[in-house]
Length: 117
Image (cartoon, rainbow, N blue to C red; front, side, top):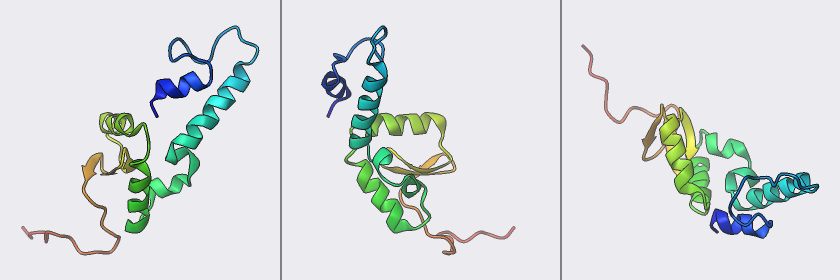
């Protein structure tokens, strides 16, 4: 679902400032909007720790949930711009501010041995 469609569902019309100013129902509108977002965005409706898990299976579960999110592109772009230190952002794993293909479990040996100098 596009965000403008989401805004249309709460009588915002997809343009202008949010929340509507001068309205007596701005608190209710904001709560309704927040609930709609929570229902659509997996990181708002699931355990937040899942996106920062250590176990590979949990990280893969978070990535799978991200693939269903309507805001995946913006989330990934923002994480790249901020150089997020770690976690799952936009369906990708970040470690040290860099996207990595897969997260390796703790205690596993390095893929490439360290060369002694």
